[in-house]
Length: 341
Ligand code: NDP
Image 1 (cartoon, rainbow, N blue to C red):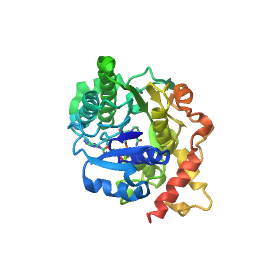
Image 2: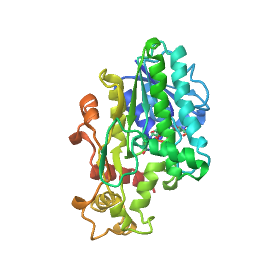
Image 3: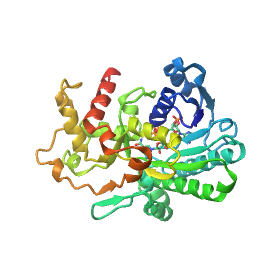
Image 4: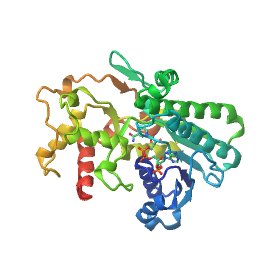
């Protein structure tokens, strides 16, 4: 069967493309231009015609042609950065992109059985005063209201958070309205920070996607106050586990609705200690940020964590099966080193 993957050249999507091909699926990937597809075609040359690319220059346009004849859709394209002044620069493509692919599927996706949309835990969380475990019932109404009130003055992170929340809500509203007349059902996957080795096209360590750039800064002395490394952190998942979850979300009938896929909570210090502990180490130890002798991982307070029982149950993403921080950082650093960075 054939799967449409939007934004196929991105950090996470290209891993989904790879895993789908490895598991015997045919893939149709969307890219914004032919040149953005060259790397994909070369990387997956051995799969021949099982991989085809289609140019959709703007997710705010139609996917009418792209959705025809596919059995499932993985909608992954969405802007992910924290430098939008106007919140609409993020919100419009996120929401319109989602609705456009759904509208095209409604009109032309007669063979589609399932649509999976990559949301984010950015659409789940809210600020808290005490450690909180969030689940699939939680929505980031906070980001929406701050952005509504403050517009351009809203913190940039919240503009992105609002774009993911509004896009995911729009997807479920659309599905509720049309579910009687479509052949597909809807899954949204909400990952936290995604790390891991890269197989997409990136030319330098300064051109990493947003999540990897934050990790790079934590590892390599780019954070002025190193104590912050033990105080701050979020939740994460390795890109390979997340790609597997996306493939299973297509294969497993019982996986419907919203699903949070997260490995664990962390502080940046945990990645730093794991990086420093590698032996042999891909980098000389003095390139890393200094560790904080007072940091104790067992006493770290994690303000945000997730109930991942749904993903364990319906996707089989159990805690023992996730990549560990140590394995993930080792693969990442070896990947960077092999690229000559
Ligand atoms: P990337 O930036 O590597 O990939 C994003 C993809 O979306 C690229 O193909 C990009 O195209 C495309 N895209 C962005 N804006 C537009 C637009 N306006 N029109 C058409 N295409 C567009 O990011 P990731 O792989 O990290 O993200 C993939 C998905 O995962 C996103 O939906 C993101 O929100 C979500 N996510 C990511 C997390 C992370 O930590 N990385 C965490 C949680 C969710 P181009 O290359 O041409 O710019």
